[in-house]
Image 1 (cartoon, rainbow, N blue to C red):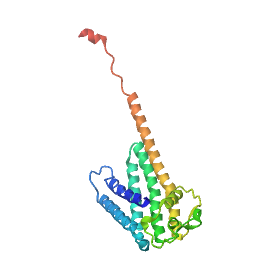
Image 2: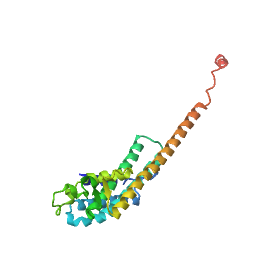
Image 3: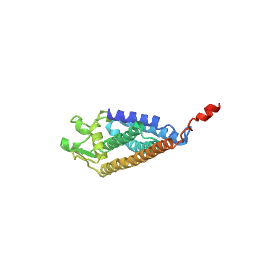
Image 4: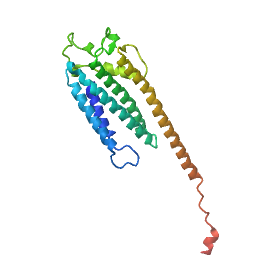
Length: 234
């Protein structure tokens, strides 16, 4: 179910963020079309990877590359959308939270693909040091299918890495998995710093504009008083 959820996420990103995102852009730019095609390619490769048996797990190599590029591109487009918002409301805050969750889910997908390519990249110390994905299978996991694997634990580890908590129950055991784990740990605080900077700057500008509107309203000239002499002349 975790793999199916990531496929639905890629589809949703391709549809929603594939729309024109630049201010004053009335129609799609060529960049938008390329982004949508990259999302479709990532979706097809993930479907092929999930339906493959364990001995064809090397299909995960293009999945790893294309999905990583697509997710990074999605985050960039999302930050552009947040940066163009003039007012900070619930929709902007919801978009910021969605971007953070996108990082964690995408990290889980990347870790899952890596573990199917190189078994033992992540070791579960809570389960006597076994490989993270194969620990839930039967005693003879030689003919496993990727669809049969449980990705919940590896997604849990991705969010733990994103928040830089690190409980120590799951550890990256290879140089590649260690590099990816550290990269995700850096991306979490970096994303928060960028988004918080955008939200604080927009909120400050929003407060200044509201104050200027109030000052203009209070400084407006009062209407001239009604003259009684003019009434008598009439």
